[in-house]
Amino acid sequence: METGICYIFGAGKKTHCDITLSSQDIVIAADGGYDYLEESGLRADFVVGDFDSVLSRNLPSDSLRYPREKDDTDLMLAVKLGLSKGYTEFAIYGGLGGRLDHTIANLQILTYLSRNNAIGTLYEDTYAVRVITDGTISFGKELPENIPGNLCSVFSLSDISVNVTIQGLKYELSDANLTNSFPLGVSNEFTGKKAHIHVKKGTIAVLWYLS
Image (cartoon, rainbow, N blue to C red):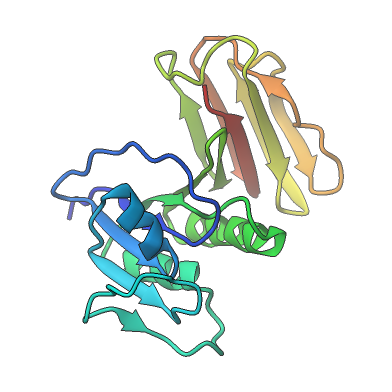
């Protein structure tokens, strides 16, 4: 079954969002992310959470309400719902900035996605971050962020990420091992050429600045 993109809106820092939805995309509001959608004029296909942070009085009657004392964060509930609907590509807004513990939790959610055969990207106004497990992220020459000098950093989230290859960026690597205790991959740069970052075994976070 072909699916589009699962867009998730959280209760973190509100980020400018300029998206065009296709008929195959879905939009999920995680708790206070519903306020985000109302301000943006976007529809919500599903609304989930314990609703301890949402301000709107217009929550849909079919919102999925959970108790405050639970193991999953509201954003994790939204991600699990998207996975259950068959989606494998996630774009998450309102998941960065704000509380640092929430930001770290949302990076862990990206790791969860990457280890469940899905891809998730967190977006902020000035940067985006994606987590890859045993795989590759590519940047085409046509992308607006792929301009010479724009920063792109790679971090190991595993104890050891094995055989990391970086091609097309200013500082290239070939089958190198990165660890989560030394930031070797910070502050690399786009060159305007097609670039790709591959990890054979392990989990890496790739952060790039938006133009």
